Image (cartoon, rainbow, N blue to C red; front, side, top):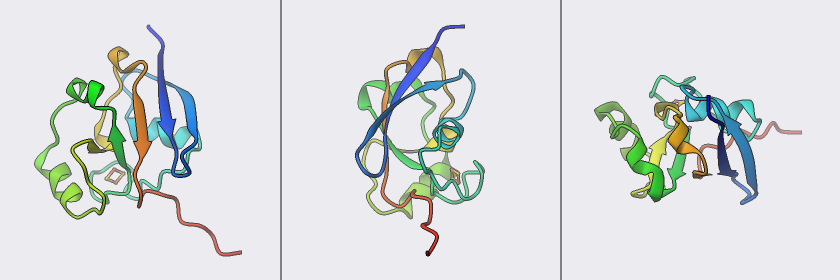
Length: 113
Ligand code: FES
């Protein structure tokens, strides 16, 4: 199996090189590397809190957004042509080298001290 490495830019602008696994959802990879994506509904395409911006050079690798994904994106602030929900994107070998930026609004809530 070929290796897949992604560059994930977190909410503070820091870039992280993370290994991805083929067939996994992008949201799971971001979450498992501890990069702080809220993903409130756990990947059911029902919350919009896994909003990311996908490198346009790689966007063709993924299925176009479903009606459910488009409905969620419609309700989010800061949506661009690069916007996707990370729980709807399955990793494949061709994703190697892709940059993904976490969008505002997908941060994990801060616990009050
Ligand atoms: S995790 Fe809820 S829409 Fe992606």
